[in-house]
Image 1: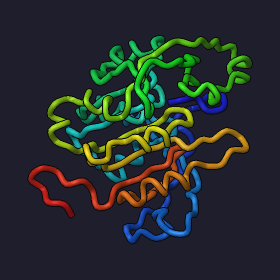
Image 2: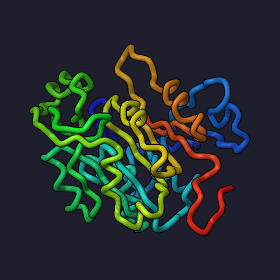
Image 3: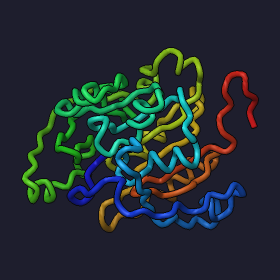
Image 4: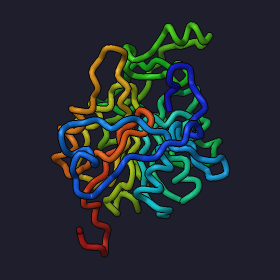
Length: 266
């Protein structure tokens, strides 16, 4: 996860009740009126094993997955695989498989060191190739305009530009384990790429996999509009409900959920 305004205490901060997620699909679920949810944070204790900055992983576990084992995840913008991670809990605690994409060569080795086998040393965008990447602690990005260099200077954090391999979403999903690809269902996609989230979603291969849920970072620079209206225009017609905003992540859940092999669609 990317540090917000100098970091913070992580998801263990401030317990807040999650908003209503009624199945009727009205304003409470984000499908009506275009109203945005207030941002919430979900408290957790260290021994619970969650790592997300504001409890995104716990929210999903309590409201959607409920301890589901053997799922499949895709984490785009994985950082070191532990710090503020939305997916560490699922891979390490619940035995999920997936892919954890992180192009920063300074932190990528830490993913394996954290006991995760899902690392992929690539950035993800709508065009493949080699592109300049600003490596700057938790403010790293392909999008140089999203890097807060004033914050880095105040914090004494250095930055540098490196060339990194970039894959499209289709290419990245080929890195999923064979069993996951054959399954055709991804339980959870976490997307945190410093204001390039829409570009990734607009290039998403919707016909290749069914995705049950997304967390999408929505943290525009000061004075810039929220990306939520565009996220809704993209995701709601594809069967997703906007269920919550946890921290700076919008949570979208497919309704009905993806059908698994041997299980009819609802």
